Amino acid sequence: MSVTLFIDGREIPINEFVGQFLQNTIAGSLQSLRGVGEWKEVKITIKED
Image (cartoon, rainbow, N blue to C red; front, side, top):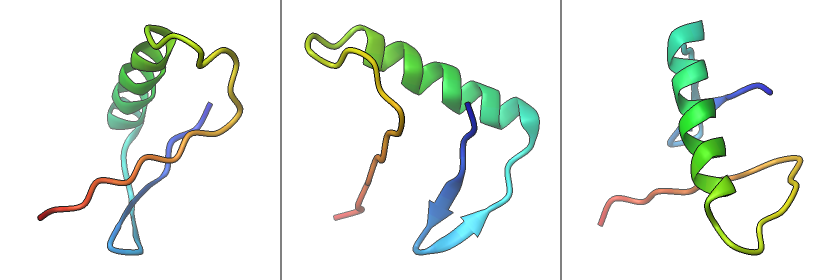
């Protein structure tokens, strides 16, 4: 797995620790959701109001 972080269209470099943290947090959260099953790519968009 790999993690890429973009903020306002600009790629933000992240180190291995942060990448692993994001990867494990998101993958673990997805496993707890019913109906998700296997996946190949996840896109999450967060917008500030």
